[in-house]
Amino acid sequence: MSATKTKADAKGFLASGVGIALFSSAVFGTSGSFAKSMLETGWSPGAAVAVRLTGAALILAIPGVVVLRGRWHQLKDNWLTILLFGLIGVAGCQLFYFNAVARLSVGVALLLEYLAPVMIVLWLWIASRRRPRALTAAGALLSLGGLVLVLDLTGAVKVDFIGVLWGMAAAVCLVIYFFITAKENDTLPPLVLASGGLLVGALVMWLVGALGLIPMTFSTADTSLGPWTIPWWVSAAGLVILATVLAYVSGIMAARSLGSKVASFVSLTEVLFAVIWAWLLLGELPGPIQLVGGLLIVGGVVLVRVDELRGDRRVARPEAEAAAARVLDHANDVEPVPSRPAAKVPRD
Image 1 (tube, one colour):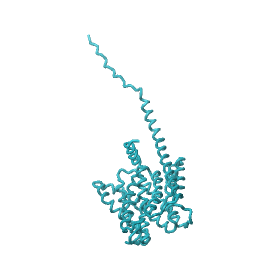
Image 2 (cartoon, rainbow, N blue to C red):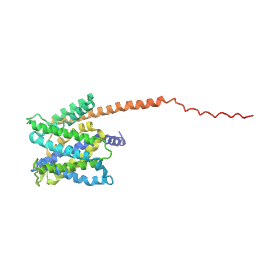
Image 3 (spheres, helix red, strand yellow):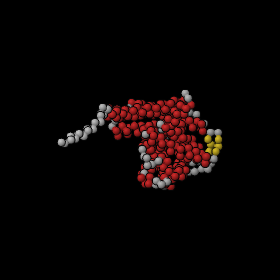
């Protein structure tokens, strides 16, 4: 295989949206390692999330203003989308997840949140009144099975009904996040949606903290990542830049390219990446069962993507056949021969 063909294939993979989605999952997956290094030194989850969203909003504010230069009407036209994205897709999703973690094990809470792809399939089934195709159903089951293995829920699990409700609420927020980010909107650039949504999310988190609904505890103690001891702001910077700025912008781009259903299934790989990053940065080596689970997740994503592409071809084929039929219907049409004017008979 030539180097030129390899580069072309790589560009095609990225352009398809799958590559961008996997990159988004990879950087999203770093959040657990960076956050854990901060939480172990006394940070509360609410404080870590507030700093995460605030820092990301400030970083994206400058490029967001540049993109909006001369087009400020885009904010006015899309203010509701930005508000819902920040309130539900950013702040709500994380706040409900941390409330679930307070009552459940992290594994169970995360599993409940990542029921979102299955919820999307069910919602599309109800809305369209058409059952999902066999490959999509198989991909859903395979990904969920892999998710259970990656989370390694075979140990003793504490189950609390209120915690389950919080986890389901986080899943609903995640569903709304995918639907908002997947919506085609030429008047709202991904960068503007990300920066505006993160700003709204940050304001909500600070408001919730000020009202005393969640604890806001900070620490300036050094953090530990693997064998390294680093200042707290390094972990915070990683949480802000990698796990938030790059993750949200690339995630919105991927969702618009792939659609809500496929993007939500690719996002399941975030769990696999989180395990890998925890291994590299925290020394938490994944077991064989987690590696098998990761393969199942990737396999489920592939099935859903293949089914989506097959569905697109089924839709495109009748349209192409109809266009060809229209051409054939007029293939033998002949321009009428213009009649010559009658010759004038000279008068005697």
